[in-house]
Length: 361
Image 1 (cartoon, one colour):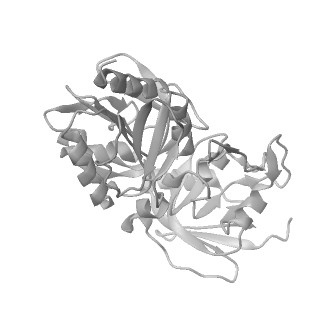
Image 2 (cartoon, one colour):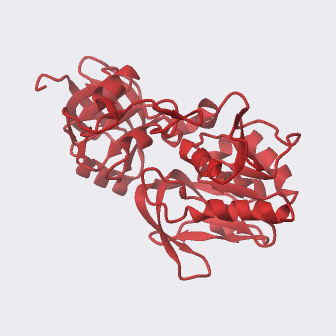
């Protein structure tokens, strides 16, 4: 284990960190971001919102519970958030070569290697995180000894088109039909809906769903700059002209904002953790949430018919919005969090209640 290949992490500001390899030995590049979760790396690595990013896990010991097997449930992989790894590379402080967990079938090293994703350990992830916190999210590249690659900015491409489904898919056979616009949806969102007597019609990001029969519209999470999703925004505009309930999560919050005429902007380093506190506007209720996004809605640009629904207690950024009279609302955080807090799971019930009311129940 001590003869692992030397690896170099280079940031766009010239900072260099040296470590050793696990996973694939290919070079890689992307936007370097950090996640503060103590557990849940199988979910994080398969979260489509991390597409094109080199992920630094701040919890010091990673790999000790390996990687879970591919158990299917409702045509979804039970222990993952999608069918593949989406990160471009993984950065950890101390990699555990020994793993033990009841549902593990292989090591993290084996899982990454099988998916051609490089990892680097032996990095001072605390120093790296502090640098990102000071400088902001930066491009970076991971180069095993004897390899080279160029920097790559994932925010300049339409990442949503890369992670969205390419065909319509249907899950469940419940009473309430929901169109799910897949911009990189996490599986646990679909699982949450299936618990609530729904039929989920999952469609591509640029699919014109207005000829479909449905009771409610859901806008999913996803990676990158929301302004890349022109077709999605135009379709949402049509829906906001009607009265059928609409619910958006993460990127879905930003897309709803853009469709309503508001603006979005890139955050300095994003919100990527399992312990972000948010305040429900107009109340004294605070919730602990899981988040993963690099862009935010500009509260000052919300139209006269819209208002913030939640605010981030740490930096006062937008964490959701709602229409003042119609059943349209969204959240920037993840109420379906897996792993992570589920304080806001009730928002799925709010959406279903909106559908029931719109159907006259």
